[in-house]
Image (cartoon, rainbow, N blue to C red):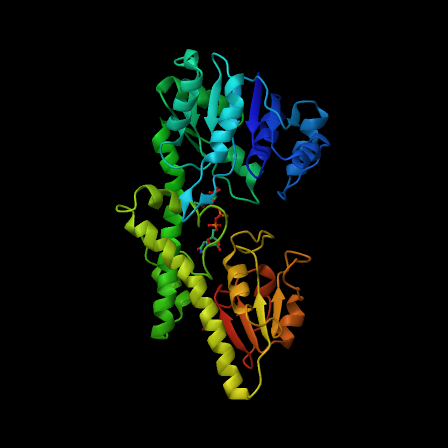
Length: 401
Ligand code: SAJ
């Protein structure tokens, strides 16, 4: 059996490597020649614990190889990005391009699976496209959707141990796709149809987004009411059926801040709560930036000089080096727009940044007049509270007002 992965990014490459590790031959395809060359050398182009070893082993054993061109295979997986176009409209052009590329190579009995996060109906659309171009395959090709649901940083474990939701365009397709995932997944494999599986992925991340929006809304209310939101949430969570998440400087990453729009774009009238939650979480970052600017002005009025402000954290969540779609980075850019001089920017998880000059944790904490916690990195939690500084804790580092 030969399994082909179209897209060797954060999900495609680890999955390809895990399948190869099970002794199956894997052909990986990526449009980026640098990615292909790196993998064929047994190296990796992304940061993920443990991945380098599995890829090296796969390439050395001859089970894993990469190319810019697809090949004839038995199982084809589409694991490419689905970004936005225009105003929060999902762009499935990469999924379509991958499908068109593999289309001439498909043969009777093959399985075609989409893993990319996709708007509802994408799998059916791709099936229609395939059968339009290759009508002889109708009834002889298995087509399914199975979303990835792994947490960056813990991908290799979660790929194997998480449950999977698998939905085919018909029952035979669902069964066939389940057989494939049994090769390497130890979690449960849940059968459904393609539309439900697509919606399930969007629902998981929208649910988290809505829950975080509730915490963020509470933080805005508590700021006005003079209540410590962290204490409030901890107390409310003592109720056996209440589980409130944590407020922060906004919601980032390439999934939770993105996927809800895939529902809103297609069902705008019905998805009012989901859309509002997105707005609340975005607004929280804007609000933090305004608060910082106000605190700086207040300081200047009181002390007759401009303050030195330390922005603590740039990553999109604690203890990672990933800055993409980061609310902390957005806030830093916003407050530093008109002047860069009176700021110290701290991000202990990266060495250097092309835009921000980085300062060490201790140095910034010691020298700044205003300390703004944007991310709750572990390096910040060991600092001592300072009464003589203005501390704006949007990440819950000290959980004090
Ligand atoms: N956040 C809060 N408060 C919280 C929890 C998180 O403000 O109480 C913020 C984080 O700081 C971050 C954002 O939310 O900015 C998202 O972080 P996350 O850890 O919740 O999730 P991601 O984006 O790293 O990964 C998510 C996961 N989905 C869910 O937990 C439902 C992961 O399982 C998915 O595979 C991934 O999205 C994806 O690819 O869709």
